[in-house]
Length: 326
Image (cartoon, rainbow, N blue to C red; front, side):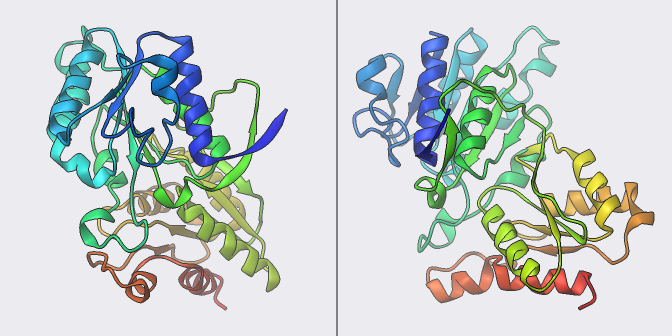
């Protein structure tokens, strides 16, 4: 039976259920305990599980990320919350040089079952140093899995899968989605990592996206429908591994593709999708693939400039019409 809950509540349910299921799971990060979480994702967990399993840290990402990696190597299953993935740059050495590489470097003697989670990308007027997207950075790293859910249902199922995974997982959320509501079953469910979801079936054009940009993709599909075009909308859900097969099969049907992504255009996830489709579905394409990315600039503070730089429905419609030759 499903009920409608917020994105943050879906994450909290996943955390609570997995902490009850496995005593090795614990949460660590800034303000996760006494303050109930910077975004209230961990609200009530300290009272329920105690200070040994819900642990407040100093403002020291390098330190607590490293402690988490060591704990994972020694048999625990940490969840490390970054207040924003912008701050994960301070901790990028243990994430990439330790967590991602340890199984390979140890010849399989060590696994690192750890989840690094928190918000990514723009969250309003936070300016350049708190608004960057790091999905493609982490997806470029062999040994990591990178999950970017777009709605409460997917968030819960994917977080549970991430916590149970024996590999390190980067789990990227959005401050602008924590209050979003959606139907989530009361019964337990798991969504496998690496499987995309066709959110809307169509025949004229394929729109691929992930994370909060799915809102833009779905809104653009609604506008296209008003003009008589049927758009198929695919939510990647994970960007390492990428479910290329679902995208390719869709393009074979629609013969046209646009990719909507919040990150800058160079070396982006959209670049990878474009390359793969032209390699494996070139003969099916009736138009060049178009990408809708943020403009290649640090994100400013002013709302008007944010609107001008980020992907939006207007720019997505322009890309779609270009691909449709309209």
